[in-house]
Length: 281
Image (cartoon, rainbow, N blue to C red; front, side, top):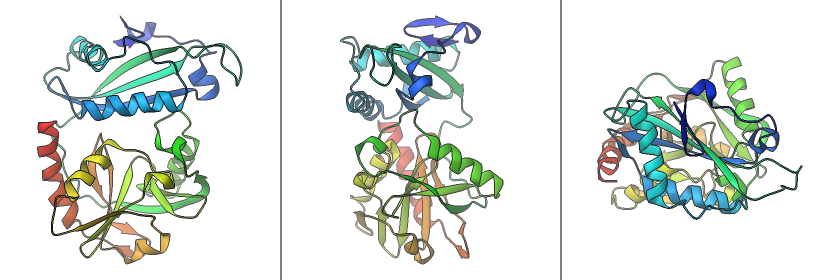
């Protein structure tokens, strides 16, 4: 079942027009949300990021879009799909109502909420071999628009095809200044000794929910010095450890980049702290 603009409908009946602006122009934003046993993880962060994304896209935010209203909408579809007692992945998409060409006929929005079952209620550290490469065919543009989750994901799609064609598990994206920005599906962290870095939002990095949680955790850990700073591709092979983060998988350690192989000591330390943070959220 799907929540289509507040109505619970069968997936086969959940239809959008071919003139939907999310399809026609990528005029849409979305949140990927993890729900565990009927509780939305990091809901406050998701809510405020969604509101910020809609404002950046100059969408009109409905008066009823309070945190309480949207939480109710999400949990209702979770319960309808009998996912209240397990882990679930939710996609909350907002699109501008159809009409107009590049210039919209309206700033009003519609929305759709879909769900998917997940296997684990906790973040688990996957220690399987995981190889990455740089994707250099196209760039992420630094600036505010790249920090939001919009339907304009052509670079991520093309990078994913490149990764599959070349038997990589993931690729890292670079911006027009040739700095490493993020992975295809999440933020990146680089570890060298007791120094830990992640690219700043000003470089075009996604304003990730788990990124924010780990930054808060790392700032409290006296054993490490944390920085939000630009990362050159040359630093990748000098690192002791690289890991990728997103709200669905948590933390994914990287095993290999070109000739360099990595450990996952810090990732293993952080995954436990992240699970504690998730239970408290």
